[in-house]
Every structure is written in structure tokens, then in C-alpha cells.
Image (cartoon, rainbow, N blue to C red; front, side):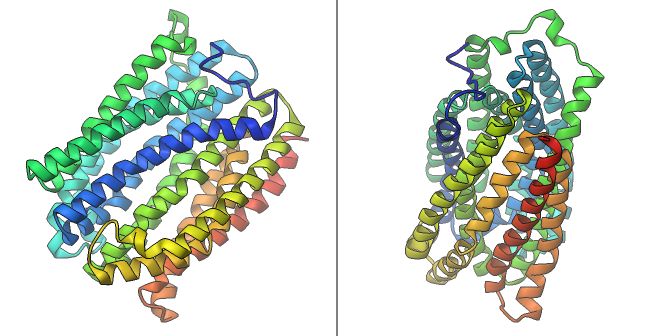
Length: 445
């Protein structure tokens, strides 16, 4: 058991957070390589319109992924709390109950997304030349939603127990498979966007299956007895109570991203392609912050379960220092190499120049972005269900109003798209920090 779980209630906070975050970070980067591989191959071998079509679907697919994965994240936090309290029976029961919920939810949302894809893309003012391809790609992603959710569920459970390595190993394998299949389906079989979708679905299925098999064979918490398989209202309510606000938070952010995408689409295909390129890079930039936040959440969850107040405070301080150091590196890279990075996706000079400018603008706000994830990690670990929803509402309000204000009323034009993203991060970071100051005193008196 010691090889596949980690007790974070003892030892150096910095060591636990960094050692836990590193495999998770590598894994998340490889997960983003899925998107990068699809984007580069589609953009280079099919064309800018196809690249824009895939990008136009991102806010919709993120909506359905987020609604599903929030439940898994909520279950993971509860598992970490039970593990910190050394309540092994409830650890297993929580894994089982979360698993059942995570089978039902993605099937439901996958069907809804498949049916509503044409209407959603039309509402977003998707340019006519790319609409049919965007609908097709969205529907394929909805079919694969169950496989993506299954892998993310298993990852959440394993990471809650301190095992961030097992998900990494199988994610690397599936990423390599995805790239190979992309090349075969798109470059050789000439299946176009459909081929990129096939590659993603198959690779995610492989990742989920092998991760589950390995977890059963090596981790005692995944070997259930009859008494562990009971589905109870009390346990399901705990998971839903924390998971639904997380889902709604991510869902609201996705809906607000759809509002931004509608504004982007109105500027035409060139701006859509530039925004898609910067969005792919921003997704990659989010990964170190995401993994840091997840590491802090697991650390704080275990120590909150063990009632180690001082170690929770230490986790917040240590996480903030790590975040600031990381942010300096990321800002430098985006300011100096934005044009070269954007040029990986397309060859159109107009798209490259606009994308590079967008990266320079958004990178100036990375400190606020990092603060959101640090505070969110602490509050999630403490079981703060309200904040996830509240912060999502704040971000939605910002994304619905600020981009329109910047692009139209302030006269920034298309550059206002990227400037508004930074302003929203600042707004969310301030509200997150205020919530932390109030909640920490109540949760850890």
C-alpha cells in the first residue's frame, strides 16, 4: 500500500506538494499534447479553416467535460479527507459511489451534447464555412465523453490517495497512441477532422481501461469487498454536495467561454484561428497552475481530515511561493517567444502576429491566474462547496460583460478579447482571496 498512497499529514509541506504535483503536471502536459497534436496536425495538414473549426468547438466540449469532471473532483476531495482521517472503509465506499455517479452523468450529458451541437454552434455565430465540420467534431467529442470522464474519475481517486504517478504512466502511453493515430487517420488515410476525433476517442479509451486495470491490481483501495459496494444516500449526497458546485463552477466558466467565442467568431476566420492558437497555449499554461492547485487540495484535504491546522496554513504559504516562481518563468517565455509558439500551429503570418500579441497581453496577468488556483486548492481541500459556485458566477459575469465592453465600447477591437481575459482573472483572484480570508477562520478555528 505504501507504494501507491502518500500520507501528507507528516513531513515537509513543500516536498509533498512538489513531489505530488510533478507527476500530475507531466501528466496534464501530456494530456494537453492531445490537443496540441490534433491542432498542429489539423492546422498544418488540413488547413486554417479546419483548425478554426476545431477551435470553435472547444468551449462547447469543455462545457460537457467540466460538468462531468466536477463530480469526480468532488469525490476525490472527500476520499482525501477520509484517507487523512484513516477511515479506510469510507474511502472505498466513496470510490464506489463516485464511480456509479460518473457512469450516469457523462452518458446523460453526452446524449444532450450530441443532440444540441448544431443549435449551440449556430447560437455562437460559428462562421458558415466551418459550421458543418464544427458540428461533426463536437458530436464525436460527445460520444467520447464517457471515456474521458472514466479516466479523469480514476485519476481523481488515485491522486486523492497521494498516487499521482499511475495516471501519468498510462496517460503518456495513450498520448503517444493518439499522436500515432492522428498521423495515420489524418495524414495517410485522409479522414480530415473526423480522423482527429477518432484518434482522441480511441486513445482516451485505452488510457481509461489500462489505468483501471492497474489500479485494481496494485492499489488495495480498489479491491472491494461486498460491504464496500453499497450505494448509500449519505455518501452520494456528500459527493454531489461538493461535486455539483465544482461542476457548476466549471460549467459556468464554459458557458462564459461560449459567450467569448461568440464575440471571437464575429471577427471572422483569421481572428478565430489566432484565438484558437492562443487558447491552445493558454490551456497548456493552465496545467502547472492546475496541478499545483490539485496538489494543494489533496495536501489540505488530508491535513484537514487529520485536523492539522498549522500544516494547512503552511500549505497555502508554500503553494503561493511556488506559484510566484513559476509565474516569472511563464511570463518571460510568452513575452519573448510568443510569435514562434503561435507559428507551430499555422503558417498564415496574420494569424501568427495576432496570436503573438494575444499571448503578450494575457501573460501580463498570469500572477492573478496563479492565485486563483492556489486559493481554490486550499478551499477545495477544506470542503468549501460554496466558493466553487460563487467563483464561477463571478467569472461568468466578467466573461459575459468585459469582452463586449473591451472590444466594442472601449474600442480595443480584437485585442480586447485577450485583454478582457486578464481583467477577468484579476476579478476572480480578488474574490477568491477574500473568500479564503473569511472561510479559513471558520473552517480551522
